[in-house]
Image 1 (cartoon, helix red, strand yellow):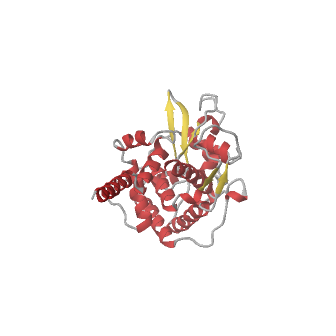
Image 2 (cartoon, helix red, strand yellow):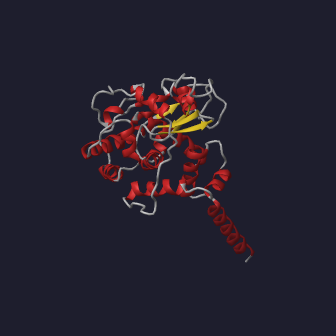
Image 3 (spheres, helix red, strand yellow):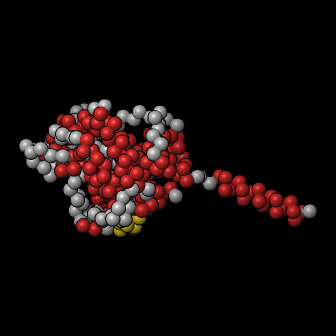
Length: 303
């Protein structure tokens, strides 16, 4: 009888341990929160933030949409916009197009990464996923929403056919980045930036969800952190990667004259040999690459 009671107690205790482990959904929520609010925050700090924001709910709702096609109608997301014409001028000047010529959205934002090895090819992509991306783009274009307004700011005309081709291009870029494993190329003491990071850890649907909530899929979108009229830092591109303003330009009225290490500077130094310019984040393949790298590092940290 005593033996039976011991066995029952052990089974009960083991079940309690399993119940106390975070679920995969909880881990994903923590990753999403850390992406927006800081990779250096603890799980407990991030869960406290979750009580004050709907960001994680929005991203996870669109993650489910990209997986299943069930559109979360209760979310009317509006990507954040803190605008500065000076930053727009800098980003436009660095686009690989002639501003006087007519250019499609793909023409303006299709530059490949600095090394061929960071631009893998895929044989085929999920057309259901393409259609789900296209549906969101088309809806925004028809209501003249966030994506549409950014096209106007960049003087890019967009047709329905352009949107279909862009959806294909965007999903292809996201799928291709999943084939990469990056190795650390610099010295560093942070355990967060691991010697190797496998980008296949991140579901393509999560990359798309982050990019949709952050930028509504417009690759040249940005938002500024402005203090006393000076842009200190700028979030740029599909995944709104944070960049020191001094990495964008040497203009005296932008930045404070010294480069701080934000997400772009750290990832660029640790995994990309410092070969990227901050303005490269407006390019689809580069924006996706940085977004997926940060997500993969977060998934390694919180798994």
